[in-house]
Image (cartoon, rainbow, N blue to C red; front, side, top):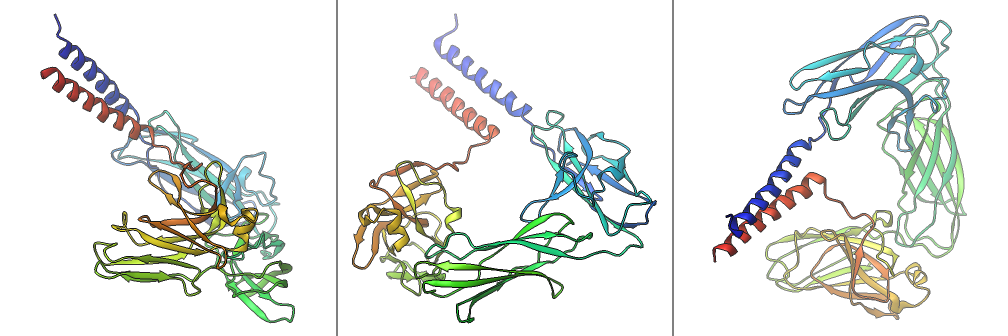
Length: 456
């Protein structure tokens, strides 16, 4: 007769065995390697060229089936290359139909390579400039991989003997909402209207007041990817400015290529409330034996640390944090417009620090004019949760003060509660293998615990 202890142990071993088998059969996606992952060549009308792509996977990966195909050449607003299906590939500069593959499905064993040859044949009446396509290479889920991995091979064809046209048009310049304490963001939408691609285009933005005085300007980093004919990208610029008074300002945006202006467009920026720019980043070295206060130069944000708040010398940094990067507010609460980050410490403070923030008229407006609804909150990344702190409100000086042993990302929150918020919308989900690993450990603990209890 089987004793209860052995029944329990047998059941536990069965659970662990099942989980172990699941972990074995959940195979991570093979990492595809491709030699020849870009084509850039010149072909005469009626001419032909080839591109050989050599595909491999890691030595420790499982055997993988791979599909290869030809797509149109698209771009995201940020300039990244993306394949387009036939229905969306409407560009007169497409080379999708000019490319054939000697193989569209291949099997790759670990430690070996497989080749695919693309043949590019231009028609006699192809026209001038450049022609473009993307050859996509995808692992097939379930054929040695739990999910698909991909490599996109951009194809840049110069039509030999023809003259490229390098032109472009700014279709829109927008500034979006102006928020106190946040950068002024200028978005320039730009389309390559020529017949040839070009690299290293950049954007220059200048702000002038009603008298024509320059109040801020900036140049973006040259774009690392090429802008393909017919495609539209966006340049995002944040010109640094000082305090701006109420009024109308002119925004001038230029797209520059090799020192030449491709296009220029202006728009009007209206400041309805005296604008305050983001605080300047600041830092301080905090030592265990002394108190310290870190504040931005304009005094809007500060953190005061008592003696013994840290156990070793630490450089603490206080800097602005973009509202667009914040996790969603918990239920029953609303994000204000003041956000910042206190960084440099791994873990918690040994003693509470005092955080003081000057709230803005935009924060007050978000609270419907009721300053008592304004709270300081930090984001607990480990719990994916906003923690809303008990906050002292000084309406005369427009100051918010709270005590905390947690640094990290902060925001002025509109809430009647000071309890921890519900998990934000961006809560990260553990992967299935990780979850199963945790379950396996838990099952093992149950078995061992059960065994010990039976022995008592």
